Length: 632
Ligand code: M6R
Image 1: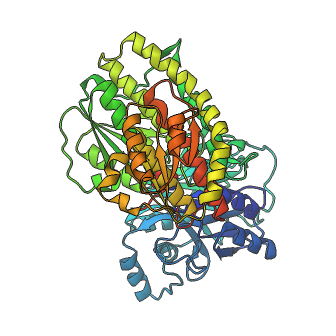
Image 2 (image 1 turned 60 degrees about the vertical axis):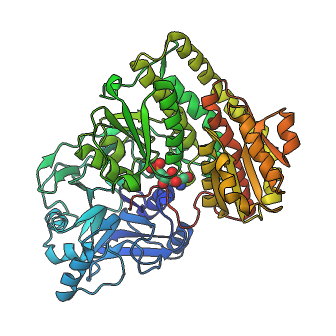
Image 3 (image 1 turned 180 degrees about the horizontal axis):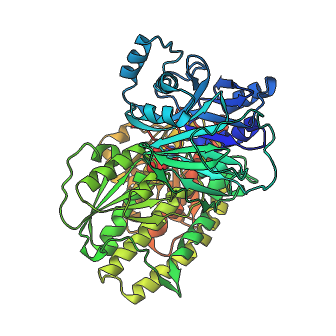
């Protein structure tokens, strides 16, 4: 959790870093802070609560400087108070550090440093870092940071500035993501604000071409200043300064810095005409699915991304995922079993990582993750790799740890997903899993050309059906939200492919509207949970015309007989459903039944959004959450 950023350039660093934090706050947002280096001093501004509190503070007491680091926090060690806000300082306040991750041996280091006289001002694990650096700092930042990382255990990405190194940031990566960005060169323009006595490069280096230099936990925070970036690897240190960017390993071996152009635009990470990122991302779904499909079609046939695995030999698949990605995996199992006849297990990553899974031949692990940085999924796939099980990643962020540690990557191409509630990544995951199932089926000789053509025709019509559903369900959804936004419990029922939809609909309502909600396989409801039904309980029933439609209607009858308030999700014009339900959210009918869950989820995303708005909840930054769960 947490996001870190850093900037060296010619613009006021405070303003640049506030924008960077704005784009990182999906990673945590319970406090924020920054440290700028100016005239041989570190200027610290920190505030508990939302980022707005920090920017108000910066407006009230501006901090000059064109070099600095910043942090947005999701509390792990210590509550979200100002004292626990990053950056943290050394005892003499000459060194400042921002950190993402966990220092596992912080207790032991804290005791050791206290015995040497260090006075700690926070409860965080991070604070040991500036104290450790200070204890070995003799004017050579890289040497001090290298000596410090040798003492740390855990997973971390951190950045350091020094009061006596006015245009220098040292950034370290071990287990948490970190990117280095670089702007266009501006030949001849000396950076404004450069201290005259700046002789910061004490460790050698090449002359600077005066580009803006940045670091960040994620790409959006590098924009619009950086035009190219590199992904720092575990065990590497980036030294940013007048000399440009130098990368070395923890033991000091030089590494060639290879920058690649950044392909994401600043528009892709703004809300555009929408009031929230969630609303924007829901609306983007037709375009996301179209893009994904385009990338997988050539001359009207499906093209198979090279995953570096012989899919013909795969006879056992394990999906590893958390949260929404786990819901997508549940439908992935249906796709793989039905189309490719492969035995599939779906595992919650935090459970898999502590089991002793069997590594039989023919097993393939597929990690499913929007962010690619979910700690439990990373640990699960590392366990699989340690057992020599091949791993493939289905991820949205292709520069992520999960992608880089996998043998092959299936990209979701959904574009940056910033709202904490996953929406467009979920439908992209379902679609990508269905395409993957077709790929495995094809490799195994189970997909004849006619079936492939039919599948492609269904896929081509899907983006239009998504757009039609989003437009067609809106008024019914808003009306139901008016009626039920005060309800503190909601039940979601679905069968077959719609069972994951029920789970996902419930998760959306819980996480952004704080409504207690449960999703059940509808056939299971009568085995206990049906006792909850009263005339006040909204029960959302997923009833598209699939092979379990009749069974599902019987389950709806059971709820109706107990006076539950029924909201049906089904096809416009379904009279039978209309007669049974108090309200209907109309959805288009997918040409291929397996794709129907991509349509059925849409009104549930919008319902959660509307209920959250009516309950005055912060849709994009719900309480207690962060977008990437990079802690266990
Ligand atoms: O980035 P990932 O897909 O690995 O994230 C997994 C979950 O943390 C995530 O899906 C979470 O449940 C979302 N907030 C759901 O909207």
